[in-house]
Length: 396
Image (cartoon, rainbow, N blue to C red):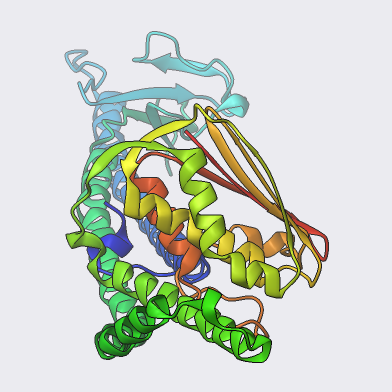
């Protein structure tokens, strides 16, 4: 489940993109801070471990010099060369040549000495007195890497705590950041719900009375034209009301799925918009497969077609055309209208998204179309050339 779903908010794609960018930047900065802190802590621990081992080697070197002095002064020939399980020693003369060593493979020339590697730590010292002709003493010990294991363990524990803490902080910052958007969307949804409730009675009254008018008996052309305009306006209001109602009741609408003859339904919906089509002098051209069927709720499919068709009429030019093509697995509605800019196409399904301020609307029609398509696993696609045409296709 995404972060935005956890926050119980459904934002348009553009706002989601902004929020995901914020989250990505926040996580990236958190990782950078954590990486810098880990690097600094590791360096300090490494230097501290090196210092501790240098002190340890120095202490043993001093003890070794005392033992070497006793060996040098021994007259009884009973003392042995000092040997330690933890430390290995090598003696070199002033020419840097090896005198003696407790190592299996000692360094023959002191000029090649490496003070540290992945497993061994070396310490070189010069005694004040040259016992056994020794001018340089090299003390070596195996690095048990205990400090590294402890460092990794500490970094893992505190790094995880830090990262999780920063994620929680980011979560609450995001909630704080989203609150104004969430409040605005909830306020808008509440406004739509109240508006829809208030529109119910007048819309029903207007539609009922218009349907009762016998237009064929009216001889006055001016009066008939006025009534047709009222009819168009009433249907426009009715469509908006239906969209708002569907948006509010979406999660509670019970589907009555059945096999729908798409050709007959499309002809019915075109006829429904005929007055508006004729007023804009739009030519509708159809190529419909009579055998195209779809198992779906009739009201939802009608709502889907109505929204696409009404957009094709609304955004079309005077005297334009609408091409409706239907085959067994695809429906396409193409208009010769304003078109859509390429950068806006992916945002067309966002709720309240509007890119033409001249033509009215709430920006919810295509959002409802997308909701219906998602419910029935239909694929919707929009193609457009700005100032030329727009084609909306549904496939199944």
